[in-house]
Amino acid sequence: MKTREEKLKCAVNEYVDKNLSAVDNWTTLGEDQISHIKNIAISIVFDREGIMHGGHFVKAVLNNDLENALFRADSVCERALKLFIYVKKFVYIQ
Image (tube, rainbow, N blue to C red; front, side, top):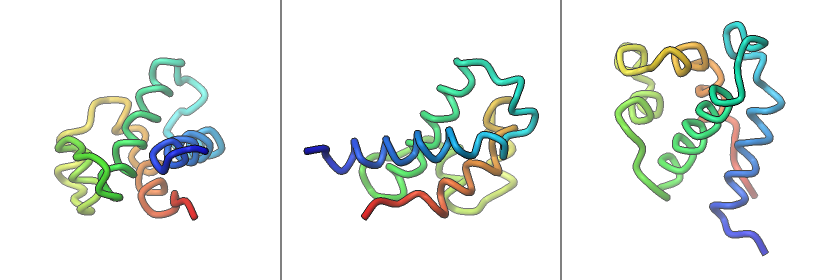
């Protein structure tokens, strides 16, 4: 049986795979960039669920602090900001 963390990771990865088009110029993303997006998305969900604490960018996303999210985002996260908001709002497990 999968742990809660494993279920959440699977849910995040599936959601990101299905919704990559929310990322600016998503067709130009490389494997490393997609992996980075998935890792940040997992951090957002894990922090929201109290499993682990994310960094300053993750906290800004969770707090709806657009100014700090943009200020702290690397170039990949800046492109994926809309997707991260969707992940925060819609990725849950039963």
